[in-house]
Picture 1 (cartoon, rainbow, N blue to C red):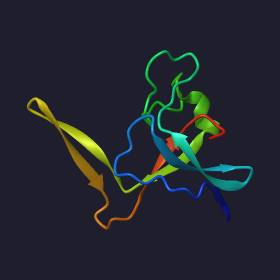
Picture 2 (cartoon, helix red, strand yellow):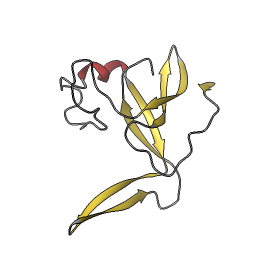
Picture 3 (cartoon, rainbow, N blue to C red):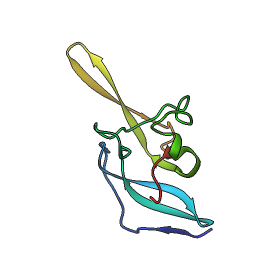
Picture 4 (cartoon, helix red, strand yellow):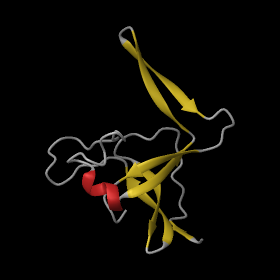
Length: 113
């Protein structure tokens, strides 16, 4: 299939909440790559946007249930950082595939992206 996308790359080594990421989603029987901001907050939410959801509860939680049917997408990355507390400091560890290929992860968000 043809994929509609913004040809300008979003290249960087670290993606912080609130920055742009690319999501792959299907709309009108066509795949789209959309630049979106990482984080989600519904209109009634008065705190900082959330950056992840638990798969065990996303389909039924008040926060994410509205997104479950129509807000599914795929995000991809070289890897991600897990932070481990070591004493009074935090140490980032980069988690990635051994072969260097991209990792594809599920995503949900408000549509249209």
